[in-house]
Image 1: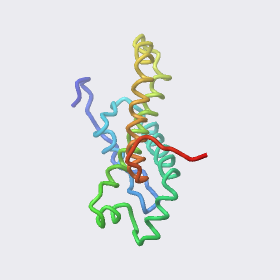
Image 2: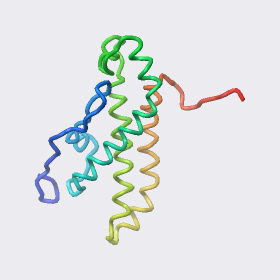
Image 3: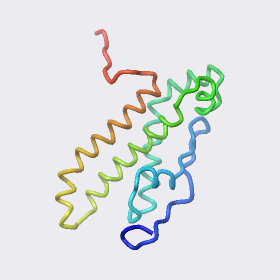
Image 4: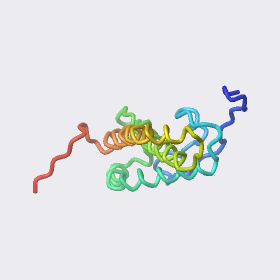
Length: 151
């Protein structure tokens, strides 16, 4: 039971992935990222699925390298090099999904507190997206947060 007096229930299904990257367990996302129980189940599922698509599209070239090296899944990549790519993948998707959920919630709220939320939400959105981007950069093999290109 939560502090609101409502039972805390978590979604019991997953968002299927492409077979290489792990499926995304919605209840795990809700628990790890403290997603409030009053968020619509469909909104949670939509944002996790949307974030999955964004992250997967940025990992296409990297996935191709892993598959050509003989890895059938991201978990298999971790097993061969003792890495934490599976954890980084989940972080990249879940932080992005939470950022988008919070942005959605801000636009739907009509409460007096919505104005205060709007003031704080941009900073929170930026922080969550930065966390997602850091995890994505680790997956891409980038160890710094700065890229330089020769023009």
